[in-house]
Length: 296
Image (cartoon, rainbow, N blue to C red; front, side, top):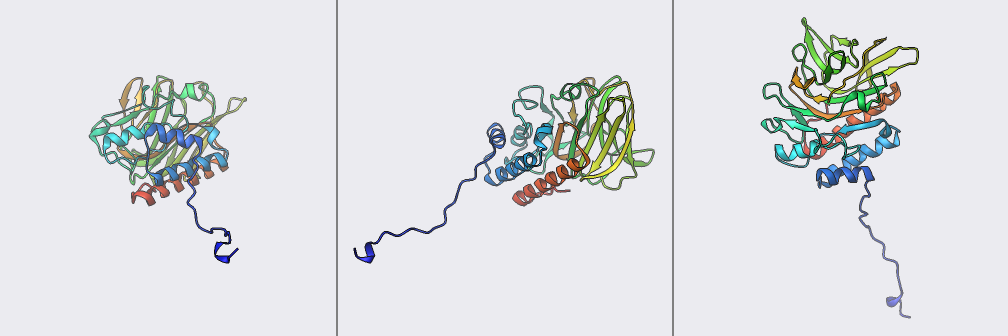
């Protein structure tokens, strides 16, 4: 056979389509996300959480990402729970109140006190945590750069003596601080904080001896903590983001943009540090795609 007809192997470069994690796919389909670069960033987040044994500790994650160009389109995508799109997502009580009155975009969800803009999550802390004395965490990411007035609450659920509140920078009697109130009768304050932005992880544990351990970390570093006991539980009503749900009324409203929210089991110190690294990397990835300023 002439050499010209000899069979040869073709050497070339082939594009192999990325295979996304099933949890990522469910989120993309529910939220209607089609931008391949954003899909890659979200999938990296999911895979990183799973590879570091953090995914199973999450009951709810709002990554507050969108590939839409309108406030209404963004809000449709912001409402979906990355962990399980059938829970704490739109269609139930999860919704944005007055959301379209402010600019909602790729930089994250914007709450605003003057327009009463906040999010109803449908998530009841005492129910999701498995009881008022059970360990749990809340994490929030914001790129806000300053403190807010006294009693501005970034997420809250209060009924009489049962409460869950997180303040990411408030000024009380002239002293700035970050506050975590995981249960009624308990409030820990990281005072004189000069940094109000980043990934905050607030967590609480409970021991059989009746001792509660409460911690606040920012970007993986603990900024305050205390131990103590209480007879009261965590919030028994739906948690609001950007406001405090005071037994059905949206009070103490905040003016901030949020880039991430999570609720789930409590975390160790090491897990908190790893979690914040992953979340910060995610903000950087989205900023790279859209030239936003989500990364604090």
